[in-house]
Length: 159
Image 1 (cartoon, helix red, strand yellow):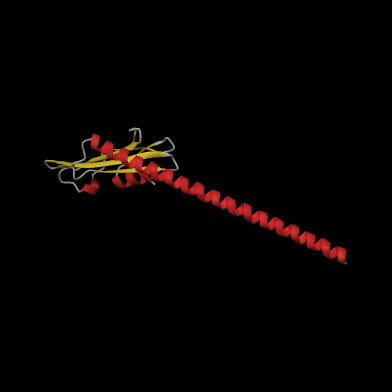
Image 2 (cartoon, rainbow, N blue to C red):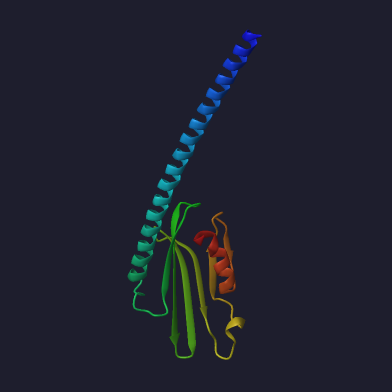
């Protein structure tokens, strides 16, 4: 009887030791994962800051900095591991309004372009874009007719 009791006691001690080891390893693994996530977040933040800076530089090179109708947005897409820049501007000349939106990657390659202008006597919504082309992440090119469609397609890069 004493022998069985000692055997059970030894088995319980071994089980306790295994549980303690498991918890210690699990805690170490969690700490490691947290450190990796923090390092990844810092890297993404740095990439986003660099992307914003590239977008501002391109905006300035295009001469749009003083234009109140122009805007720029830089976005580092972590899934595609790439910086994308969306540059927009509008112009008015006599009775015609113009709108241009271009999506560039960090190297300046154009991935999407949208161009629209008003026409005399027609409502804005009735006038299709004169150019609306988007290179999708799959490599396929898609054309569109409206700014809304363009923005939906470009969202694949700007999310």
